[in-house]
Length: 378
Image 1 (cartoon, helix red, strand yellow):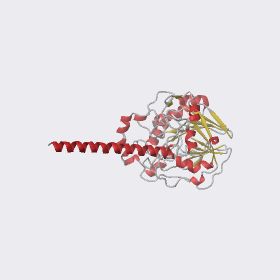
Image 2 (tube, rainbow, N blue to C red):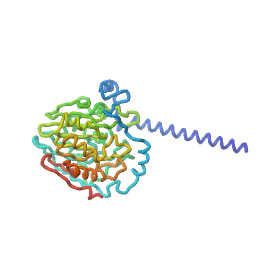
Image 3 (tube, rainbow, N blue to C red):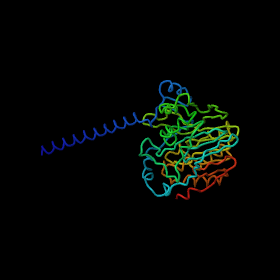
Image 4 (cartoon, rainbow, N blue to C red):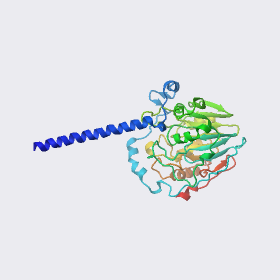
């Protein structure tokens, strides 16, 4: 019996050593991967950290929201994992319709054209300038190939047309909004980047010159070529790795030109700041409003579609567009749930809205696309 017990003890000891060794090895691999992979970016350090820490919206833990905000109930989020992994109507059954024009764009000073690339990515041709907002054109919303993959489109995004970009506006540093491969492809075609505080550190680590970056705190503004860019509050969080939670700021944006006043929500939960933004900077001709990737487990940081409609009413916008859907699956709801719930609530509450096809270039104030294009992919 003694030899048997001794043998079991040795087996248990070596099993424990093996498991601990594997855990240490895995942790080391993860550490090396994060430390050496450029897609994680760079959290603010040195003078950059000193500068952004002067913000009234920054404390010892990083940037903070205007109101108490929980990012997610971890246990409730874990319960949703089976739904996230299930199939059915969670993903499109066919490639999504796309209306990309492969001809050159002629930007006019007196009119505004808008092109939606799905999710939160836009090209604005405003007052003769070409402005990209949250240009995420990559295949995966993740630092690795294991993340959420972009839905198939009937046409590929014509990246070759993204030339002579005057400004890129970034709302925050999450992977579905700030994409390393995309920045690498377009950075030499961009004259200037405008971001919330701290996000410039990522861009500089990716080879963007410091003089091409302007970082703004909430309610600060900068003017370029007659267009006023104002960073505004949103209710969200930031981070690309393990140790950079809330190290950079998140923001919504107002773009005011002689021709139009435009609002872009970025990501975030509902709050009374929408009314404050309208009071200070509104009313708006057009508002692009987050509507997708929501769940009750993280309702503080992503709006439900009915809240999206309320935000549009708070902003006093002439025209609203639901965004943050139509590209990735980052929540357990069906991929069409955002648009079905948004349109129902918008009709009930008399919020004017548009529904362009992905890639469709429309003229603001003249064209009012409202196609139920998603039904072709169901």
